[in-house]
Image (cartoon, rainbow, N blue to C red; front, top):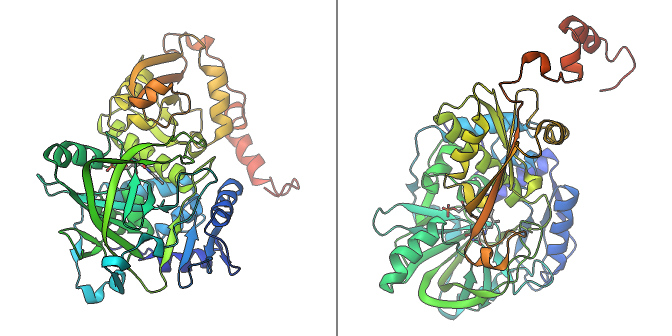
Length: 481
Ligand SMILES: Cc1cc2nc3c(=O)[nH]c(=O)nc-3n(C[C@H](O)[C@H](O)[C@H](O)COP(=O)(O)O)c2cc1C
């Protein structure tokens, strides 16, 4: 069954406008820092998405900033009520993404708006697109911050869509980091570069929001099928101009070319999702551009990573947490829920559990830290049913009262990390190494029941009939909420 959801970037903009989650900026803004500064402030103040109608030097182009930086916008992208709660959105996401994979369908190029303008030869010039200077101190203009790179595995023919940031180097060259444990990293460094073969790519900028969500989700299912699962119907794709790849037909901008083996160009610095500039200038993966296609009046999407909350933090936390939930449920662990906090820059995950047997928290941490998901975070907090995993006050309370400072904290010294961890030493960053930690906030099962501290809270301290009476009379007492 196809869900009701915005089918492209333009329908998404209309839906955000309708739900009150968009501000249309008519005043001209400069691609050189001004646009980036606005998007940054929007993220920090949790404001509606800015829709820029006029960009200095780029008549005919527009931009949407911070497209998915709040749960309200995520709900709109899923076609849900914007006021849906986080558990409601999470349950809907899990329901859709545990259905059967849905393969894309290829449409005719005449039905593909992304082919409205085709730039080849000298016209395929990256400076014709309004790539912004996102943060002061960035190593260049970042054209691709909310986008994905399409590639195809030469052995399995599986398609990979992955979000890997990309900086413009010159008219026909882009450069960016592709981490060694990412799917594209394994494909390019494992299957193309050793044979000195260029790898065809297509960068897709600004398509429907669910395809973007799929591209940054850590799912084992190829993302072009995963996007179909989120939509409940196939993604419509069209063949590229220069290679054997397909891209979403309704996308605003497509950049086609080849990733060049055994050549690297310096990229960054860049302000990162951790809230720090943790990307130094280093030699990174090179994309040579052959052709650019775009819609009339193309609308770029721009993410500005930094301190919380941007869409990378929100969506990566959301999807990483829910993949962990699927993993733990598939192993029959009696969990009550999993929530990764976007404010932790997807470093801290809270797992709710019924502590049915001893050392269940360690079992959870071992499973999570042993999985493919683990490079991106390093704090697992396990709480029992008393703690609301979506309530930050409750989590802090459990951490500071139930986790024993010595035996409640377990350190895992040898983990896979990312080069972006602000706490990691220069050597750990080079080798993508990271330590991990478990905070066990459950009381030991071998304590006598009579020794268990009783939580002093409204819902634990009063008989049910008194709670109901108070709740039923709440407004009569004179309270509004
Ligand atoms: C805005 C944004 C930018 C990202 N940039 C990079 C990047 O430059 N390099 C990288 O390896 N991963 C990056 N990631 C993380 C990947 O998108 C993420 O690991 C995704 O799951 C990739 O899929 P894969 O597992 O198929 O490689 C970024 C994520 C987001 C949300």
